[in-house]
Length: 158
View 1 (cartoon, rainbow, N blue to C red):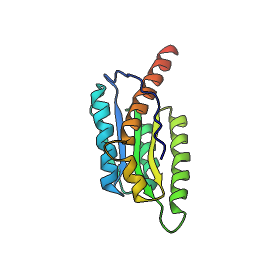
View 2 (cartoon, helix red, strand yellow; view 1 turned 90 degrees about the vertical axis):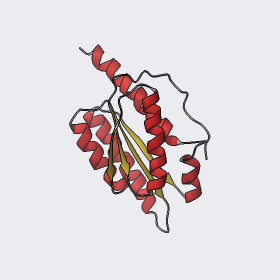
View 3 (cartoon, one colour; view 1 turned 30 degrees about the horizontal axis):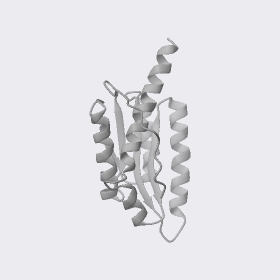
């Protein structure tokens, strides 16, 4: 596992509206990511995020598209955990959702943070959703930074 994280930018989240859409599959792991993302957003001063739950990772792009279409949020974080099994299904889900989320973000002009962990085993998932390393914090920091980036450039066009 990479221990690298992006450099942290101090972002004033005051007034930012962030949505989190999370899978119910691998729920305990996903809940940890959601908890850390929410704590990071709150600490930055953002409004309490809207949290929506969907059955699995494959449903996350549709939910993100629905929320992005309504233009109510400065950023959307999608969170899921996909663990490899006996087939390559995890690769299909990882690739298709990543592509769909990128398309939603660029077409709707709303930052959509891909917080879907695609891992080979439970140990890898636990290593990324624990207290020492929790990618939920990074997803929230990315959402804050991209929301500020978007606001900055929207105001320059006016």
